Image (cartoon, rainbow, N blue to C red; front, side):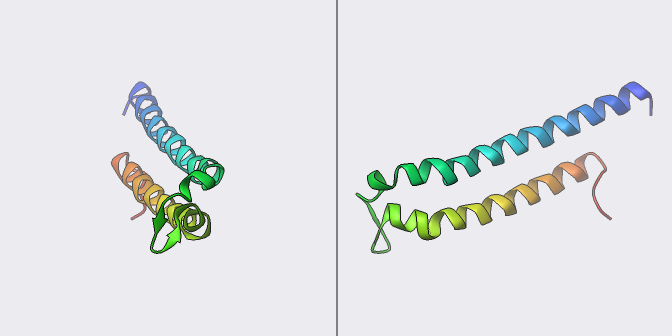
Amino acid sequence: MSANNADDVRDRYWAKTRNLTIVVLALWAFFALVVPAMVTTLNQFTFLGFPFGYYMIAQGSLLAFVIIIWAQNWRQDAIDDEFGFGED
């Protein structure tokens, strides 16, 4: 493997990892900052019998964070495997 090829692989790996991190941070900011700011508007709707804004603050955002963490780990493992940095 030449130095240029190794640098190219490393650059593509970090580009994919950086892009994944940007998406994860944007989703986190949406559920941590935007959804609470819109709680009054969201309360006009109901979900499982609760005002939707209340539900999102109490459980929805927490559920979204767990899903975001799971998806980020799943996707990062796939990126690691694609470039030969995976475990096993």
